[in-house]
Structure formats: structure tokens, C-alpha cells
Amino acid sequence: MKAVVHTEYGGPEVLRLVEVDRPAPRDAEVLVRVRACSLNASDWEGLRGTPAYARIGGLRRPRRHVLGSDVAGTVESVGARVTAVGPGDDVFADVLGRNGGLAELVVVPERALAPMPSGMTYVEAAAVPQAAAIALHGIRTKGRVRPGDRVLVNGAGGGAGTYAVQLAKLDGAEVTAVDNAEKLDLLRSLGADHVVDYRTHDYTAAGRTYDLVLDLAGHRSVRHSARAIAPGGRYLFVGGSLRSLLGVLLLGPLVGLRGRRRIRVLAVGLGVRQVTPLVELVLAGDVRTVVDRVYPLAEAPEALRRLGEGHALGKVVVEVDAAGAPPH
Image (cartoon, rainbow, N blue to C red):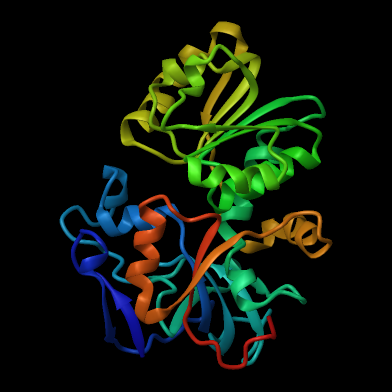
């Protein structure tokens, strides 16, 4: 089968479209023919090997040669203990297997997939898994947004951020969205009350505080971030620099004592069954899935470049095999 692989860390230029061995599912696994695969910040980090935590399991060379975690496709075959799906079923998944979704076939643990939502295309379904899980946990499960709360989403123009802005508005919050200038019009269209270009304004130094800061692109010190949290407020770190991550882990509880602020890393479980509430909102038309561009598999390096350079408005999706796709 064809797959886009990388055997060293670097930029998109280290990726190659090659023939690799066809994988085989184990007892509790499903072999999925990939129709579409969406990209996440973790794919860019895994490609480059930075921040340092992206090298866990592969200090000098990547352990996982095929990137891409969020997939939608058709079941090709199943392991002996799989009972929930069978060959021919359309599914979507957050890949937990040995390799990723930038390939014609991928092995997925049964627990990590679910039937594809009726009414979605493969491209739309592939855009959902990680972005929806982060937004739901960040705004509702851990963020616990209430009507009237002031919410700031940093890195709001990506997949998780665009969902988070919309969820916070649905929950009655006053929302500030932070990203680069080319994404601000999109964020206004999704309902953001205020937009901030991080390249020209530092939201932590503006003197305004928030009941919840969902930080999808954390690069500030924990002490600086704490300045933007209202007394009794919450700060949830999702991704960013290693320095910021360590600051939140080691100093967050201590810094947060002043003003009863909760400063934590957002832990999100994998598997798509948890994103049902957001899928229902999308299908009802209450929340919009923002897909920036769709690339063919051969152009996966360019897809990753667009994501990594910060130009993507919402999700970037790679269409691997469009045969038999539901109509757009």
C-alpha cells in the first residue's frame, strides 16, 4: 500500500510517498481503508521532533513513521474479537495504532473508533476527533463554562479552537479569540465577541482577566499567563512550548494559590465515542466544522507545511482514497 513516511525529524521535505507493507489487524483491532485523514498540531510536532516531548519513544529518529491521527474510512477487515463493526462499515477514529492515517490502510484498536455519523462526508468526519474532544473537555467537562463567563481561547483559529469558540458562545460566554491576523475575520464569523492578533498584542499584559483561558498554543511563562486569570478562574494548557508545559506542571498549582486560580494541563482521553455531544451539534447546524483545505495524499507535505506555518483556518484534511465517498 502507499503511505507518506518519515524516518528522520525535519520539515515537510523529509516526507516520502512510498510503498510499504500492508498491515494486519490483531484480535481487538480493525483494518480501515482510509478515505480522509485530518492533521493536528501533534503531527507537525511529531514531524519536526519539537518541542522535546514530541520525541518520546524516539529520541534520535521517529518511532512512528506515518503521521496522521484522525481518520474516516471503510472497514476492510477485523480481528477475531471485534464485534462492533464489520467489513464495509464506514467509521471514524482517533488512531491509537502503530502508525498513522497518512496511508491507504491503517490499523485501529476497536475501542478507538465508532460508526461514522450519518450525514457527514469522510472529510467532515475526519476533521472531528481530536479537535472535538479538546473543545468539549476544555469548555464543558473541565472548563465548566457558565452564562456570563469571560472566556479566552488562545490559538483559536485551528480545529479545536474554532469548535471551542462556538461551544463557549452556545454556553453563554463572552468570548475573546486570539490568533494571527489572517484568522480574525473567521473567528468573528464564528461568534467571537473580541479578537486579538497575538503578533501585535499580548493578552496577558492587557489588564483584562478571564474566568477561563483555554491555551492551545502556550508559549508564555505560567506567571505571565496567570495575570490573565480572574480570581476563582481556570487556565487549561493544551499545547505549546516545553518550557510553558513544565511551568504549568511544576509551578501552576503554586502560582494558582493566589486568587484561588486553577492552573492545569488539560488531559483528554482518546477515542471518538466521547465526541458525540459535539457531533450532534454539528449535525443540527448549531456548530460548524471549519475545513481549510483538502489535499490529495501525494501533497501531504504541503498540507503539513500549511498547518505548521500557521496559515490554516480550521482543519487541514488529506483525502487518501475518495472512491465511494458520500456526496459532498
